[in-house]
Length: 195
Image (cartoon, rainbow, N blue to C red):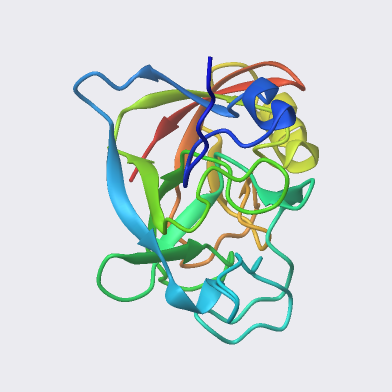
């Protein structure tokens, strides 16, 4: 049997064995994957993917590196639109920047699903429900908020400076991305999207 590799196809054994960190639970009618395009500023001149870094001013100003695992942006990061259909990792800015959705695949690095293709799937849809696997959210802030609020309480999550969902006690004008439905363990989080 001949195996053919191409853009967006599995190119190594590590990639094929790596779990997705976002799983739609109730998205049959409530949520959907939106086809978007990675902002062109996130490609180097040789065509490789460039991770958004602290100090970047294009396409967004950043105060922290985007979260990665083995050099890959992880599924479940919050994306925001730049211009047109272009998206980038949210920067957690405490202003009215509108979160767009959660990225559905690995980008760049060891687990890259893009190759030279710039198309990404962005999970979105108010009231859709997703299971996230660690480290797709900042559990140090979320676990404390869930414990303090008690089970079933309204814990809102926002885009963190590294693009992961996080809890903040003073969000200012930042737009909430999701509501925690359940945190069964440090490895699993069930969320309801608000965007």
